[in-house]
Length: 134
Image 1 (spheres, rainbow, N blue to C red):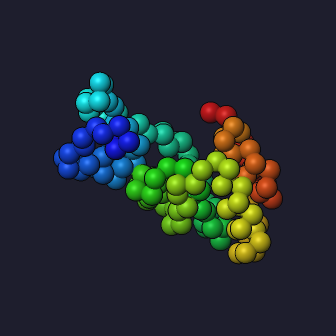
Image 2 (cartoon, rainbow, N blue to C red):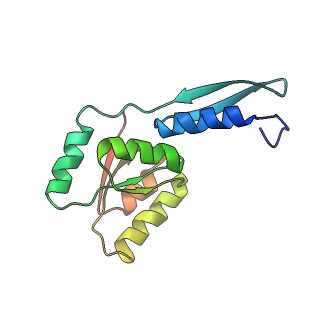
């Protein structure tokens, strides 16, 4: 919006923040260089995700959320799932670098779950890559 000189009011910024705190990704819509609306989208948390994360943590396994989502949205989702460590705003090609750093710098054994499109390099770099398509 800024690049196209579309005015965004403080109330719109507040609404964006509200959506992000709910774990939604908000997108501004402009028609003819006039702000026309906000579309808020969110991923559906898998039915058994929270229980699976709880079981992993009970076994002493650290669960980290690595995502391209903005920090506010990622933290909202992580909070719902009981995930304490979030690495957000990571582009697909950077995810491989993060996995490599977790392995080399932090000495972690890394299992990564991700979609097979954007996460392929990171899944390959992980000690265990689990690709899900839906």
